[in-house]
Image (cartoon, rainbow, N blue to C red; front, side):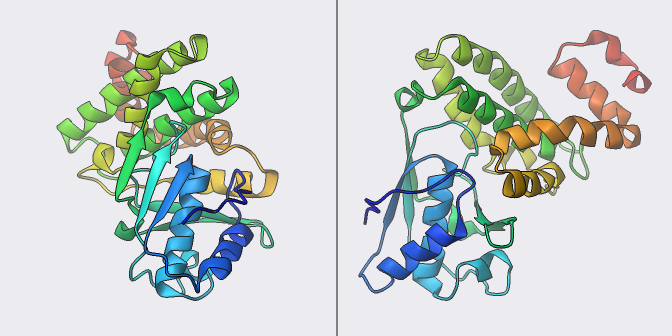
Length: 264
């Protein structure tokens, strides 16, 4: 089924998802295709929960109703950012309560994702930059999570991904139609939020939780809210594991002077 009326907004709205559910609940729907970025895909996931399990959609996001299944969702991706095309997450904003919440369940992962870098050529610079920030924070929130440093392969994957995003993010901003850089960003976005870069440790996502508050109240782009908050979070927690921050400086930023963990 297609939702031809459109109207999906950034920081996707509960009211829109609930309206779509009520409009299509009595139709014989067995598949939803989302074309867009995370706002579109998260809305599709939310509607898919409701079509399968019924009830108010917000109940799934407040965990007062368990997610027991979903109508399958596929996607055609048009921005490299949130990784919703491979993640188990969906996020909605309840505009009445000014509350933005996530719902994570294995049922949320799309059954397929079509990813053509050319669909991202016309993205505004700001949205490209916000997408790069989101990819990096999905990776760093796992990198600095509990039990960090206890899985060397996971660390190596995360560090390589961060280096790749930084390099190709700059290139995509300078040359928006550069196929290689857009392709790299798309692939990094998918890997950053499919749990690969956090394999072997629980994810914290504290900055994302704080960012959800900012974007719900102030209607900031998701990536922008993360960049506003992460430096302050990092300054606060770095005292507890300076060696971890020193490692990121060495392996990702190339700061050889951080050989001494206390220098972080």
